[in-house]
Length: 369
Image (cartoon, rainbow, N blue to C red; front, side, top):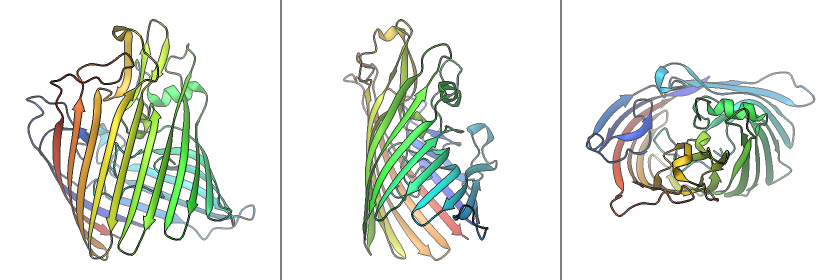
């Protein structure tokens, strides 16, 4: 049994697009008199419990283990502070192979390369963020690791609803699971990798399904003083990973058009009792690769598709005393909302569409056990 208690105290200079009463911050809300006011919050519902299951009899000559993890974040805004399943899986391990059954982080999140921010978001929306029920196979013949998985959407990690059909239902109606494939090289002090994601959706049960996907590259460099992690992701309809965009539907031609995005980030994580860190991220919405037709006939199923770009600079400082950690993080996040779209449904800012910027102060205390 293990986990941590997390007490966090947050201040935002303006209203933000977020989840869980403002705790899970994505980017500033569009500019208006109602959003140009500050916000204050204090939370402890991200405190976590985890149970490692081991010392079990072997099966098929493989070592058997498992893990269950939960917190009090709630599965949606409606049930915040309630107990929520995060991860739960059974695993079989051989010398160079591993099979996992259950709910775990999406391979696009990449446990070998994700930001170590103080914020619960760990870099979202720049970093793909989702946990998925999956069947995952990992082959590790040496320094090169190959990862393949089939995955399903779950809870908040699903596509935006379309005409009352949830993202989970859209994937279920497609009759196909999502597919992941990754290759990684693990050296002495470096890890580099690349991966791809494929999924099918059928928002209208009487229409054909459509497919979309993503690709990414990432790296981790480790030294005694710090660890540097970086990732770039290009893909379409990634709202199931808490990123912007999604897709649009043209009712005249009965076609769905996935919306592309490009996201990059770098994270520097210091070591020692007094450990500095820095996260920098940038994301831009690219619209569809095809013209979507008459805009008045288009219905979007997307998250903030009118954002032209969003960036974040987030320095942090942690004071570490064994089980106790005091951490302060300053998040500066700026987004430019467009008042119009071009023929590909890409944001097309007008001259008066100025960026809006939020500054978040985050003081958190962690007690690990």
